[in-house]
Length: 124
Length: 124
DNA sequence: CTGAATCCCTGCCGATACTG
DNA sequence: CAGTATCGGCAGGGATTCAG
Image (tube, each protein chain N blue to C red):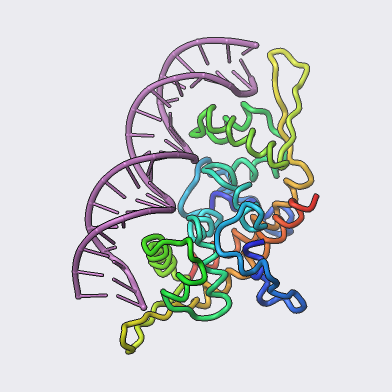
């Protein structure tokens, strides 16, 4: 709610009392989203999963410089915030398939907005 | 460029070779934008400036828990990445007016996208 | 008023080694 | 294969103090 008045240009959306919040708050929608994307490699993992389901080792192969530990932290975090789903496969050796939840897929437009601004900024 | 293929759903936008970048890169548009927004308090400072120009002490008053040091760091960083402009006023005591550049104002839709996703996620 | 300099503390992330 | 445990380096940020 802290950043609610980001909706400056949106008609009919009053600034409201929450726009006056004076410090970073975990309940602020902007903070919620940034928290979900927080951490090195996170957006790259999401990008990879936007292309389709992946197992742990497939992600490792696609992002060779990403360590086991960090990948596992990222996936745990993204699962915690409801962006990815884990599925143990009955295979041997054991494998786990990771996929984006609907909420995870809805990050597409968000990443798109980030990509667009970065592109315009870089090309100026 | 690393996250270029975020444009999954956008027709006519090829994944391209850059979509294969396998580690976080400062030249990736997504990274550029996240770097601009990086740091606690940053989005709140931008939100405040979206409402209009502010002096250093006005920002301090609006965000009471934000220290001199961090505010000054944030403003320096935002100026460095071309999001804010600094104007020394000829007043006494000396004051400085901070305003968003066009590029800074164009962060509006980005923050909107972050706000929207955070709102939907919170309300589920 | 608007900062810069310093100190300290915490959390992130990389590397390495180990487990079911 | 898919993780967890541990350690160490480093950067972020809060509090305080000093300067232009």
